[in-house]
Length: 153
Image (cartoon, rainbow, N blue to C red; front, side, top):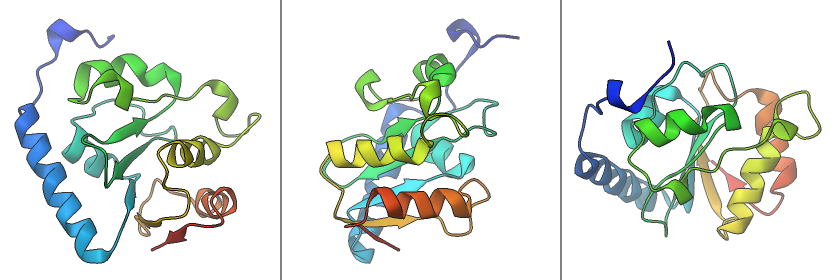
């Protein structure tokens, strides 16, 4: 059954998500992180409200120190779900084309790297979820290749 806005009600208010984001940024400051990349769907949901059945595709939530909202990225096919389920403004939802789908022209980590460069975090200290079931070794290696000046921890 397709997801339609009239059938969806967020579990929390925007202020709850904003508060969670501020707590996450405080923890980032304590760890010396400029950015945080979240690949686990539960963590993405906790900070963005994102809900979908698309956990099988590459998606990532970027928490950037200087941005007031997270940046969510997934395949274009998820754009409608992000509009309906997340609290973020549309300009913080940055879906990638099928050119970036795995086994296509580019790898989706190239898209993430391009976003990080656009926001000025290409040489920052970036936290990642090392024990995530949704960030493959290949994806981690490619992030390092696309962002050689960044420090991952």
